[in-house]
Image 1 (cartoon, rainbow, N blue to C red):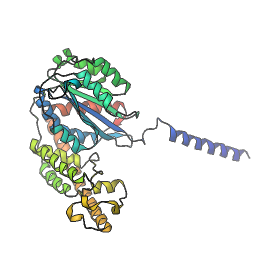
Image 2: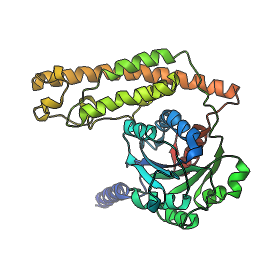
Image 3: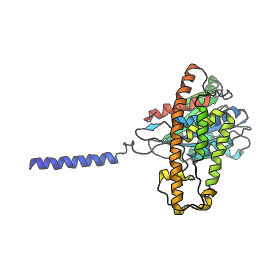
Image 4: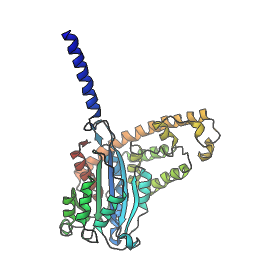
Length: 375
């Protein structure tokens, strides 16, 4: 009788423990996490170099973040973009514009970066921080990483909204403020950029925004470029906006290639990472996420050579492209790994480091590790 009672007690205890563990909000290793990064870029006259660096180094930053982990989970990435200090913008809005709300569409992020031009102006740091906090969907999930990076070269104190008030609002939303002064370290300190970062729990950084970008060519680049062209051929657009999105993919390849051949190599690596997903317009990515009912795919929005396929034939074609893409990505990822090691070695041997990319990655990793993210 005692043995049976003990077994019952033990059974109930184990069952209760399992329930507590399953419902424990502190057990976040099985929940999805998101790294949210808002870039607030000064687009006044003197900032051409900053915008150029942002365009050039986007893909390297994405590639680095693709390696991030939270326990057994791999967090998603969302990037938002604001411009400020541009005389072409409305003075009533403080010369501030939301260019892009939080998005995981890497082609769209690239497109918006390339749309930026410089002019003017008056740079109101407190106001652009405040606007980004009010307008963006930051969410409330405990283990999301929420970061603002504001870059510029005028005093942090300008404008009708005090930066200290804006940063107090950021703390309430668990948003970390990082400042990047485009100029000398001491000038940024006197302009209160360091104070802004310290109050915001982030890092103060300074860069030479006019520094020429140093690209390291590797023995793996040519093959990655060839594979990228093959990768593009595996995409099957669908839906009313599919063709436009497919065209934008090619346009952003062209934008990257126009900057430098190495930039298209970095973009190809990003396109082979888990962070590059186009399920909203590409049937192959969509098939990775869910079972597709091909009878509901409107043929008029498909590529012309696929419009007359039966449901069975279309499914077979998607599966074939899915297999081909997987093989191409595997090859690109293997080459990218070798390339990463090669670049790291060359950087250790040289004092040259790309300014914006270097400070962004360093700050993100430092702050992510504090929240139990790892690489």
